Image (cartoon, rainbow, N blue to C red):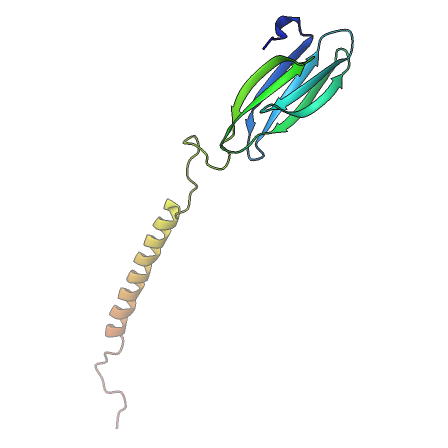
Length: 143
């Protein structure tokens, strides 16, 4: 297939896949002195067909399929200007993400241990004082 190569007046940048929408941003810059027609294709099907004025920049967003490699291409006069493959893996993230924190914080564990010790000390004091308090040496009611 012939290529437009460096003879194309269009400058094309195709971005990475953005999650969670599985979108790819395509930026087309017209460097010529006249309006030009171009098309953005995803897997061979036209997603965007547009005309760009001279010296203008257009940003378009195309959707790609999940868990599948999609070819995103820009053509000018039915000649490919730039083509890249993009793979969307938005549902199942790879190892670059860590698991969410689900357990108690270490401060919470320390607070619970301190509360348990305080309850035990309070129980020991009440038990000790309960054994000491009712003792009397004299009779309660004198007759």
